[in-house]
Amino acid sequence: MQTQLNITLPNAQYPIIIDSDQFDISDLRPWLKDKKVMVVTNEIVAPLYLADVLNLFEGHVVHSCVLKDGEQHKNSSSWLQILDALAVHRFNRSDVLVSLGGGIVCDMTGFAAASWMRGMSFIQMPTTLLSQIDASVGGKTGFNHPQGKNMIGAFHQPKAVIINAKTLATLPVREFNAGIGEAIKYAGINQPTFYAWLSENMHAIKAQNQKVLMELIASCCQFKTQLVEQDEKEQGVRALLNLGHTFGHAIETVSDYHYLHGEAVALGMVMAAELSANLRLCSADIRKMLENLLQAFDLPIMLDADYPAEVVLQRMKSDKKVINDHHRLILLKGMGQAFIAEGVNDHDILQAIKACTYSPPESA
Ligand SMILES: NC(=O)c1ccc[n+]([C@@H]2O[C@H](COP(=O)([O-])OP(=O)(O)OC[C@H]3O[C@@H](n4cnc5c(N)ncnc54)[C@H](O)[C@@H]3O)[C@@H](O)[C@H]2O)c1
Image 1 (cartoon, rainbow, N blue to C red):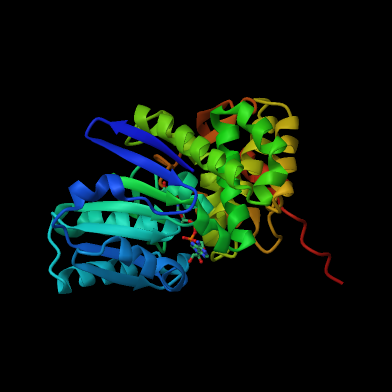
Image 2 (spheres, rainbow, N blue to C red):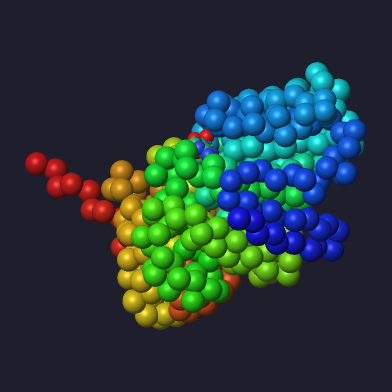
């Protein structure tokens, strides 16, 4: 089973090939001719899929670079590790990098490609649900700075996104569910009927029914493509994809990545819905609707008491989306009616975070 989408931007056009049981690079063969290939992956994904992917590039000079796993390694050391490997094997601008892994490997490989010799080509081969439905599409690349998530980066579009949905079979359930957090985001942004689809297909998704998973991945890639095509560099409508993310990025860093990205986004969406209702932009039902779906996939809807709201708010102030100390948040007028809200005040944000945080246990 295979679906192909295309993304068309002012200076780039590329396919997103979604296959149910293989990485299909057949259409890329003519373009790949005579190129050296470096596959970047990590210590978890390498034993699972690296040999198969290296085989795909038989006949090419092919190398691999295996990074450490985890958000704490989405940093300059991993980036330099890729650049050092490119230097050792004398890669030049006409060669190609391939990412094989989740969103972290995709983002790091993309940024290495953006920065090596001022820009070389890369292909995304995402292997988590989150990276297949979001991170691999749209050309946002980068890594974390101690001050915040994804602070260092560039817009750099891949030459292709090659998805093998079968790789999800080895993904831990918690990681799979974290991916669903980003899928629910699309329902909140501008796809109200997708909320109903997710609710109706909940059991089939959890059971990883092949047909339903293929539809899920294709739909989300389509939703993201539509927004990226309108606004590649996030000057406007693409910012809607940040629903739940300003809260979420702060939660990830404050908790030292105790929460997975998709889990933090889930909490962030609940907070955005709470804040929207408090500002009388939407009814309280929207928070409830989001919570119902998030809970069905075992995603968190209340922040642990270990992370005080004041600390989360403070961290939100160092987000990329804060301009001149003014918060720029994605809020909701309804399910599928997200919009960019400028200048929301600290007090209102704090109240929303508190309303979505467990109370600390009473001291004896
Ligand atoms: N660039 C973008 O537009 C964009 C969008 C959303 C998220 N992101 C970024 O993506 C990252 C999160 O991505 P993620 O959720 O994929 O996390 P991840 O990359 O950490 O992958 C999750 C875990 O699953 C493992 N793994 C990957 N594929 C596997 C497989 N098939 N089988 C078994 N284990 C596997 C990984 O090694 C890791 O331990 C965050 O850093 C976030 O900032 C980027």
